Length: 161
Image 1 (cartoon, helix red, strand yellow):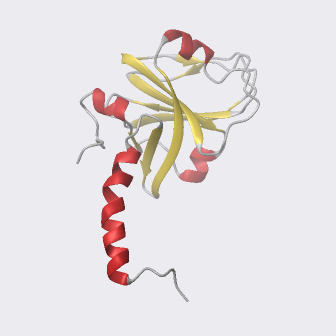
Image 2: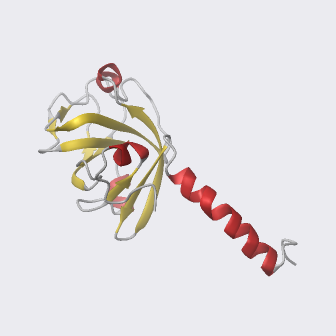
């Protein structure tokens, strides 16, 4: 029993796919988070315009476990988020210009108008379903990889080797 692919054929196939896998990891719609326990990959929507950032994930009733929204700010800043009209509980992952996670806010409550402070010098915010950051080991010190982080020119984990 087998797949019909010989070991040499499998090695050639893996060698062929490896560069494509690396490229896919740095596609605009994909974000990776490297933690001490491994790498988590999310399909992301990008919010880099003020109108997109104001709308965020409001009024959505569901989101796939492998999905999220990446907020990209033009410059590092302190910002605040709230959950007005947001129906999903979320984890918010705040990162600096280098893509280094500086803070994680777990379990933001749907509809809550209390401000969630990013902390200083935040350039990126990743919103994912509540509970995933703890389950995946995403904590301060984890690192984001995405083309938007590379554009900042300071990426700890760049898209290009």
